[in-house]
Amino acid sequence: MKVVFNADDYGSHPQISQGILQAMRHGAVRSTTVLANLVSDEELAWLRQVAEVSVGVHLNLTTGTPLTDFPAACLDPEGRFSRRVLFAPEAMPVLEADVVRGELLAQIERVENAGLAISHLDSHHHVHGFAAVLAVVVQIARQRSLSVRAVSRWMADHLAAQGLCHPDLLVTGFLGKNNIGLERLLSFLREAREEGAQTVEVMCHPGKVDGLPAGHTSYREEREEELRTLCLAELAEGLKHERMTVVSYAQI
Image (cartoon, rainbow, N blue to C red):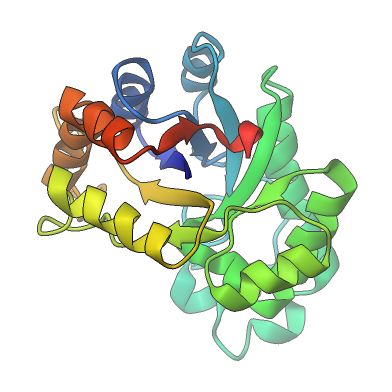
């Protein structure tokens, strides 16, 4: 079975990005997705220096400032994305496909213009699980021959019907202090194999806490623990014992 460890949230904060880079250089992570409306030029330059990893875009409509002239009705009073505002009834009439497409393309192009080849797409807070957003993501992915994260069985079937590449199954359980140890991770992968998956994606969120502002994220110490697990020699040994091969998104 092939396993993709994809680190979400690259660009959320330099310390989170540094943790992801460490997991790439010294651990199992071979893929990451970039928060293009938050990432700095310096963080993008760091990513260019890492060999043999695949880079995607963590499409974002819920955090930070948009890169395009997004409708004010879909933003909070400070002009920032907000889950609460975005999916409120009053926002729906102005959240047109062209508006979504323009923002998502701007995010993709921000990463491409930094000299990084893009292999795949997923989204912050799984917003591409909403039908209106998914339709746009599918169109973009088909035009650019990009893989897409499937967040459900239904979405996996839908992506396959559209001719899009995706892992067979997404492991979302590697999250939270009770679920990010080595044995728990290996058990998630064994369960995926028992379900018949040939290619599995593990969604992960490694990062470093030192210097991370207190209010930046509620998921703090857990990022350090994920980083520790992903860099364990015992993880590499366990995967080898289970005959599981770590690959990047570009290799699925």
